[in-house]
Amino acid sequence: MTTDEVIESSSTPPRPAGRWIEDWEPENPGFWASIGSKVATRNLWFSIFVEHVGFSIWSLLSVFVLFMGPAYHVDVAGKFFLGAVATLVGSILRVPYTFGPARFGGRNFTVFSGLMLLIPTVLAAFVVHPGTSYTTFMILAVLSGFGGGNFASSMANINTFFPEGRKGLALGLNAGGGNLGVAAIQLIGLLIIATAGIAYPRLMLAVYIPLIVIVSVCAYLYMDNLATVRNDTGAAKLALADAHTSIMSFLYIGTFGSFIGYGFAFGLVLQNQFGRTPLQAAAVTFIGPLLGSLIRPVGGWLSDRVGGTRVTFWNFLLMGAATIICILASGSKSLGLFTLGFIALFVLSGIGNGSTYKMIPAIFRAKALAEIDAGANSDEALLRARRISGGAIGIISAVGALGGLLINLAFRQSFAVAKSGVPAFYGFLAFYVVCAAVTYAVYMHRAKTVQDASAGTPAFAKV
Image 1 (cartoon, helix red, strand yellow):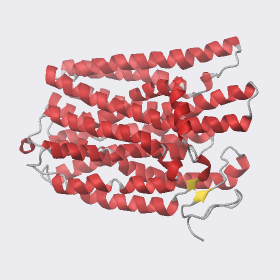
Image 2 (spheres, helix red, strand yellow; image 1 turned 60 degrees about the vertical axis):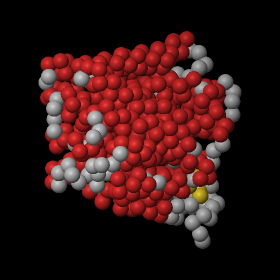
Image 3 (cartoon, helix red, strand yellow; image 1 turned 90 degrees about the horizontal axis):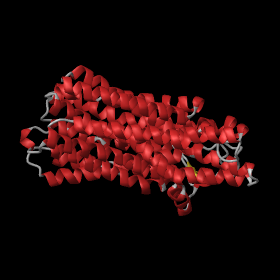
Image 4 (cartoon, helix red, strand yellow; image 1 turned 120 degrees about the vertical axis):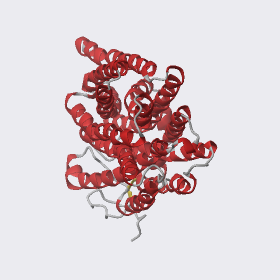
């Protein structure tokens, strides 16, 4: 038998090697207990491995800039802009990457997206040294954006493997394990600076080029394709036409956009606002992404129990409070308080990432249940909800990642004008307040109104 043979019966467990699975019923308790859980969990872990490396490569420039001393002739604004370019490209690629698993198969596209990471890393092995033009570094920043696309394809793929009641934790683990790639590459950068010095940034590539090959081969050997989620452009069109896709995209700018934006900017802010050396900055920068990544599954887990809407609302208010701490610390020149506030932003963005991603499939499922109550066919309504949520995930992840671009541009302008990040933080504070207000008005308040009126529309308090 070949790896492309179709599994005809849902009662026969798939072989370990990846292939097309025709029958996938995660909401069927018997199927999930006997087959589904094992297969879904296996795909989850290998998806995490590839996405983890993808995030590391997406963050490549955020570490390289710590090595860029005067010999590179790149000023502070130029360094922030490299991070902005990488963020922008990764955000844009998330749209086509979303539909890759449905078009080509989750296992197939994961292998492809992993191998694409060799392009920026191999190029970096040749060009990262003093004397390289800024244009070349810009090209490298563009190519590192391939790592940003991985997230959308990975999340869209894993979303289809798990039943509704387990999506929050599964998506949280998938995203959190991927997000750890930001902290991992920063930690490796720290070790290189501490041991070999800032003259050897390319040592990172000796770690990541072999790792890319390993995780891609593992995805080829151990992941599966689901024929039941083969997509059409109609899912994307339906998602774009739904107002909740736009609303959740806006909220995701505040959570994931903050995480990736701060991940790119943290080291540069410490260097230029508090005069930290590359080693001193690198010794701290990995802590925020590390904690933010580890806490993300907790956001999904907590949302499974009390609702993603509640977690998201209170989380945005706390992000505003952490931003105020950063502003006050900047004014008093307190490095310790500033670091505490900034790391709190990472932790809270991680929780918010988990809660907002839990909300996405739950919102469309709530709408489907309302349609069923109104007389719609149960299977058709739930299948439609899964299709739309799959399309929405890619769109939301793409728009949300643009928050990282906005954060880097805000810091770039703030340091250029005021020689400080304080003006940028005031802008972030205002945005978090608006996000909290939108979450309350659209989901928390609406749910309460619906329940009080006993109306036949989605009860988003359960979202």
